[in-house]
Amino acid sequence: MSIPDLDHALTAAQRAIDLAVQHTLSHQPTQIHIKGDRDVVTNIDLAVERLIRDRLSRWDPAVGFIGEELGASGDKNTYWVLDPIDGTINFSHGGSLCAIALALVHDHQPVLGITALPFLGRRYWAVTGGGAFRDGDPISVSTTARLDQALIALCDYGSGPDATVRDQLCVTVDLRLTAQAQGVRRLGTTALELVWVADGTLDASILFGNRTWDTASGAIIAREAGALVLDADGSPHSTRARCTVATTPALADTLLPMMDIARDTPYWPRPAGTP
Image 1 (cartoon, helix red, strand yellow):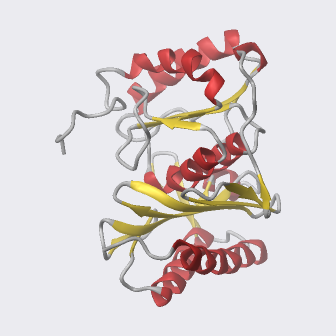
Image 2 (cartoon, helix red, strand yellow):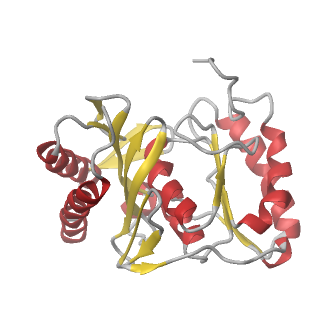
Image 3 (cartoon, rainbow, N blue to C red):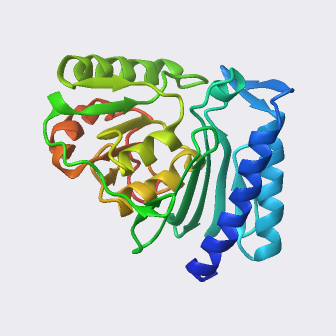
């Protein structure tokens, strides 16, 4: 299907996020279940996903939907993608660093994104060609050009079947950045990191292991704010990407060579045509 009218889609998505934020702030995570290696889901994750899925399916049932917790349905080329609570470990421990991340994807690229930070009282959004906003105000990336002046977020170490490979990559990049950058942070929520790159709070964010629900919303927000959002080899980021590097443009030539260690691992882009 073709892309829905983005102004109408943004209005519908904002209303759905309103409900999700309200629910998250007014309910406690009373049920916490293990769903994988060091990976949990709460009753709030499930409730938020059902709420947003239901709201958006009533707005336009032709648009597909992918949620982290309840899977995919409908159109596979034009779809909403949602992480109902990105940073569930933080959330389940009572931490405030978590996000509700919703994007509209068409032909492997996000064309609309909203990321809400319920416990910080912030909301970020963007549509293709329209710039990026935080609580209604335009935002842009930092102008940081030197690594020794840069604050950079690095993804969590690995879990699941590829944990060993991801751990090795993270250790190597962590050591290099720790020796050269002004600061390195591991925040536990990629969606939040990407919007903090967008508004200049962070100068870059590096993720090994792309999950579309974690990155789609923040990718378009960061890109519309002036960030470069790339795969490990420097190619443009998409839902097919294996890694996510979001950076202020002046740091790209310094950071991208560090990603070459991902070559010949599952985190390097596959050749065109590879399933």
